[in-house]
Amino acid sequence: VPIYYSEHTLAATPPSGTGFATTQFSVRDITHDESREVQLQTHLTFSGVVRGLGGVPLAGVTLYLSGGGGTSTTTAGDGSFAMSVAPGTYQLTVQKSGVYEPGVAPFDFSYRNAEVTLTENVNQDLTLPVHLLTVKTLGAGGAPISGVSIQGGGEEYLGPGTQAGELAPGIHATSMSLAIETNKTDENGVTSFAVPIYYSEHTLAATPPSGT
Image 1 (tube, rainbow, N blue to C red):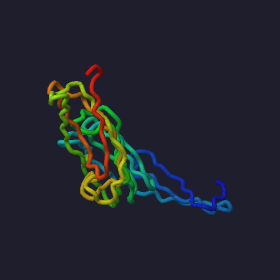
Image 2 (image 1 turned 120 degrees about the horizontal axis):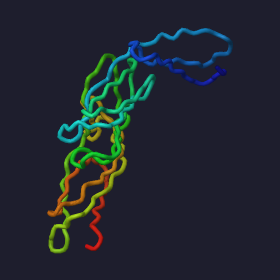
Image 3 (image 1 turned 90 degrees about the vertical axis):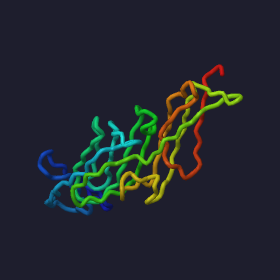
Image 4 (image 1 turned 180 degrees about the horizontal axis):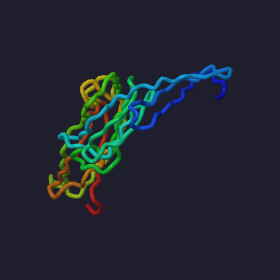
């Protein structure tokens, strides 16, 4: 190892099935040959199900626990996840791109920097803080227009403890970004889709089919 004068850490990652978690240790100020023992920490499990609007389980969502000995995983087909980490405080990110029905979750979403402190095994479902918005697109004289697509999105700083970032009791994201891309309006000019709680001004664009 080189001589580090600022803080640097190494991660000792045990094989799976040992019951131990990835454990970090500092290698600052090693100015001569030395030996060091690293006490591996027993892992804890953070698990649950990621859900969208109406409690629908969401498959393929990526979760990151960043911090000392953090890890990541992707939800299974039933929306379930399980992550093994050492005891500690982590920053949780929940994100996904594409594939969902618009009435279940935004097309793209990322909820970030939700503080999670783990001192024991925790099983906690995470639910996206979204609501259903139904839009009807009208033309001249109030006639419904079908085939209209609606798109938009943006990023927002939420601050700690806001309803817009609440993934579960006591687990609040402090920022989010997402994209909305809906099914086209039906013959009645109507489409419905999941939207977050925006506290600042965001706009969506309703794009009619060509030739209208």
